[in-house]
Length: 158
Image (cartoon, rainbow, N blue to C red):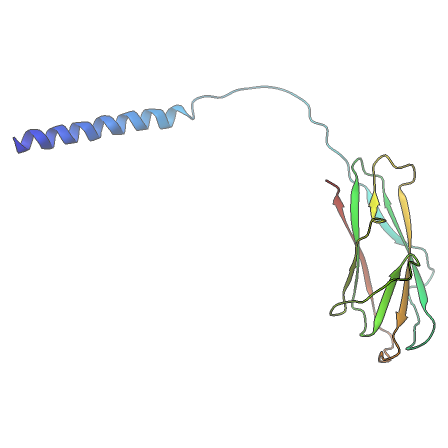
């Protein structure tokens, strides 16, 4: 009797394995073919400067100095962008487009993204000119020949 129960159990397991194996492979047997077209958007963005020199001069408690940044997008999609200024000396603040609001960097890095950092693909003017105004606070240390990096990071607007 025990032999029959064992054989019956083995038979049920074998049938179950065959059933599951057939259905597992059946999922991979179906294919479909088709043709179509997909339009993709092109990206064409640039950043440039308009100064003849690459240097700015600011002194603690002194006058400000400006840097002109030009951003252009001829993409077929809306883009947003961030202006990333890094390697700023301690005590240096930056204003964007003469707003009167000076941004304070964190650990020498400043990321600026505002409503004015968007270029839509259907805009008539696809170029944005930004004025970055640098100033040193009265308690800033004097630094000479400091290199500052200005980068622009673009993303597709969703």
